[in-house]
Image (cartoon, rainbow, N blue to C red; front, side):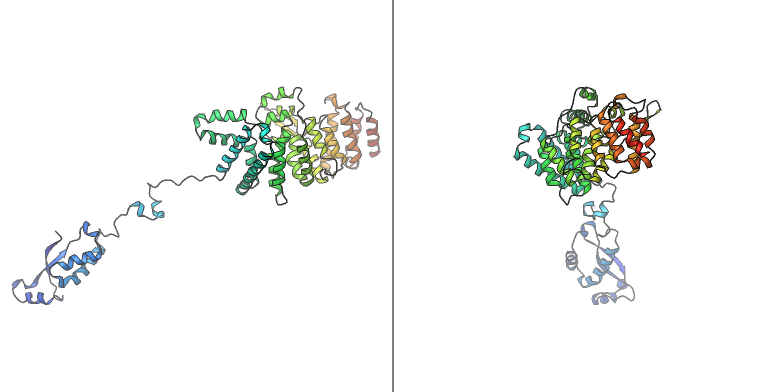
Length: 469
């Protein structure tokens, strides 16, 4: 079946071999010659060109093979069964063509650069929480912990800058990312038990795992001259602020999500004092990074809204910095390593009362007073700032004067009337910023308010105001 006989009529102008010319003169059938032509089949397509030529040369009439091979090659190029038109398997297609077929698999999901970092950070946090306090405070463990966290911070910084530093701190503080990382590490993404692990992570492991010594060593290693302001703020808020918050049981309860226990914690709780290591750390930060220290550590410690912007009004009203926190803040305003004058001005502006209106569930607009709560603990901090006499804008001086008038108004609590700390603050404002009070038109309202004071400083304040008028 490799070939078949066919009757082909010779054109008049064609050239045939000599043997064919002899046949042409011998009889009535001299106009026809018998030519054996190879019929192409699918099996023959796989043959190489050399094999096809060998088969053709073995057949009779090999003297005509040159011409017939030329014809066959031409037919093969035009044949619909040619190799060039046969469909190829998808594995042999180019990648661009294979990707456009309907049966191609979807592209793989993009892997976040934070996935591996979050997992390593969560594992380190869990390991630190599982350590006994005596072991975690050892010199060797502190050194190893600082090296590990320093490497993580560098990688987080390369991945997201200041945002990456904040992300790392959120995991160490037991935030929402830490709970998600716990689910991934422990559960492996199992949705059936994720809810239980999430509640377990919030209830048992919501404390900050680093002690004062570890944070102090980490700050010395991370905060260099090459560290930018944004990364320094993110680092201080993520690793130093939790130590300050831990001094206040109310703030610690709010930060850990136990807002229902705020009322019980407030009763008779005075917090804990700062350690020597923490005091030394804040003193060095006030000297080397004054603006970042104020904005990321001191202000969130004194104002709950600066620490947790979404805190409800009930918690904000019940929040009060402890005596130990305020004493530590006041210490940063005195001595040779005190905050710079611009940093003091920034501190005053950030803790000033903010008058705002909040819509209740009934739809009523209720005025609220934000900022730092004026108490027996916080007023000495503000007095120490005014005694440094920073360059305050007129708007800040006006707010201070209006707040003093509000505290001495008949509708306000009468606790300020007999408070010596409040009288000292009143006198500092009048003696240091008298010209600005006069230009702002606040002298007369303050003279009226001074008459309500029930301390021995009322006459001194009144005389100072009378000189200004």
